[in-house]
Length: 204
Length: 204
Length: 204
Image 1 (tube, rainbow over the protein chains, first blue to last red):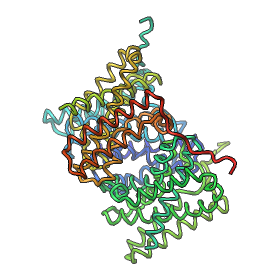
Image 2 (image 1 turned 30 degrees about the vertical axis):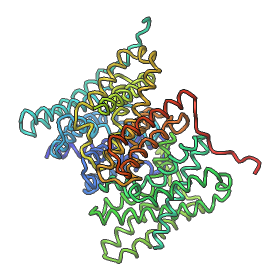
Image 3 (image 1 turned 90 degrees about the horizontal axis):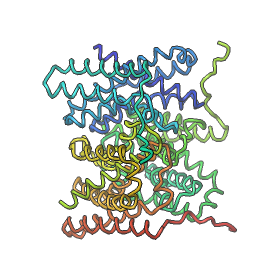
Image 4 (image 1 turned 90 degrees about the vertical axis):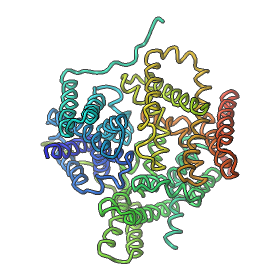
């Protein structure tokens, strides 16, 4: 139940982040909603396509879609206010990364994916929406460049898979993975952690 | 039968629009055909992937592919002429939007998709090819920015789903939806209708 | 067995090409690995999604993923050296194009795809990774613009399908198609062959 609430929070926050990007790119209101909804449910769409879940869960069940759409409407009306509560949005975004990564890995395991596939698909569930958002508005995906973002998702998914391999109860893995992923993401934001780029190897 | 002819017209017109973009981006002749074919059949490809129709219809049945390819060849040879009949192309493009949206929604319903999924997948069938075209040539998709384009597709798909829910004959929904979508698209082109961007909320 | 070794060589070389692009775009080390791995296994991912092979082969079997990942690590550490052996990389890349195109077509036929679908899916297997790489780093895909690249892939896939239609032994088609595709690619590189752009038709 808690995880379900967090799941919908993640969709709403991701959708709002996409809608904000759409507003700042001066898209029309329909374009803002398209980018927002895709950012909110895109990670899950890719997960379902990779796992062969047809039609995708977020289209077959209206609450997912409605949550994403409602978040876009809120942004359209209140975007200056939403920007002002940026730190709150970032915390929810970190929670979204954690919940999406662990939930995606759990669904993949339940669909018969192996350990590696479940880990990767979990990570993709968490970062796919943001990547689609950036591709649609013609930007290089931010998460490739800076800001520890995909690594927490990868770790969260990995925790779920390891918990499954060691036959721990599923909820324990989901909760532990979400906490670890969200915590690492928040730590990275707070401390400004980044991954290095490739060494230049100058002078060789 | 009429819908079938319109369907192939839609593929041809979409493919031609993609090929024209390829020509103006100075792609080589193979690149022009790749972008053109993907624009023509891309919406249906995404529809089939979301619905789990494998391999996709437009690859398993050569007339779809051949139609798209032939349209690209015509553009390669006659692109100045094609540009000159731009208003004719725009009318056919509007028809394509209508037919693709309603056809996509109909196929989705027949594959067991729910009302929401069928509506969204119908819209994606109509706009997916153009979005893939713009992503491939590294532009922000036009339809996010201006020009009432996706909304007619959404309405057309919605009509098909509503007709299905109210147990009207399938053809009635397909024809009504196509006419409404194409008509709205043409009206928007003729009157220069656009959707607004998000309000600035200045002074708050 | 030989084809298997070539297959893994193709993954490694494609992944290395993606990682090199990531390094030159100044992505962080995680971003370099993401772009590299996607370039290495992306063509196969798209193939599996189009054929309904869920979860995709390259995620269900760790050697594929591990090969791509290892190639990225090598590039991260040794990228100046990798650049220096550029001609060797180009030869392996040509081999990769051939092996991916024929292998993709063979897998498509085995999954029940028709002749056209198998040809196109074979070509997509060979070029998909590079297209995803260019879309992710926000460039127009190189192969649309110049450098005979997709055409050898198309021909290689076509040879496999024709061999299947004429009931030749599968290995003969795979080997012949790979040799033809890789050979044509190398010839094009060596002689600087390009396809023309669309004729201007000036003066009409």
